[in-house]
Image (tube, rainbow, N blue to C red; front, side, top):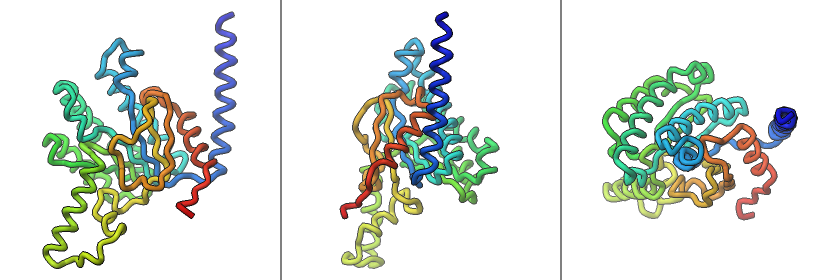
Length: 260
């Protein structure tokens, strides 16, 4: 008899998910979602016998599911935080595994038929000088394959740090001031935004972080000035479609005044 409540629970969950999906589709959809994918290692410790690499692989597979969900909801811009500039301080073996996984994942994702059929451009944002050559080669491959796609933009942050991104933008503008190309009086928020990795994208409407941590961790610091923030206790590998729907519904229920 133990299976009966489980069956009922799944039916109730399915009914609730379908109802929530309908409600979300009727509301204003965020154009750009940024996701801090946190919790792979804790997921591994609790559910995978402490196999950290298996936790990272489970998190990588979840990215493909996320892409499906966002395409279905017609969310045009999705930016995921895969590997921060600070993550290089982790154990060398773990970093090497993550870099090898990144290369493999980048080469695999552009072969996914969904990418070309939906005209998804896949981009990597971050400091390429910190990445191994083989990862940079994979990034070039992705750019070549998807560079002309323009219906959706799927951005993966690798070796990324929000503060460093701003510093790099300021350096570029300072160089233009020094060369006489830019008058200091003309420097504006818009000009700085034009020198960021995300210069051709709208700022994120919603920033979502998994794993229960309530902080931004150096992610899109300039861009999130007016973003709605949503935090969930779910570890990234355990993130579900219904969790995304709940985040979007919360975004839809908030009144965005932009200081007015």
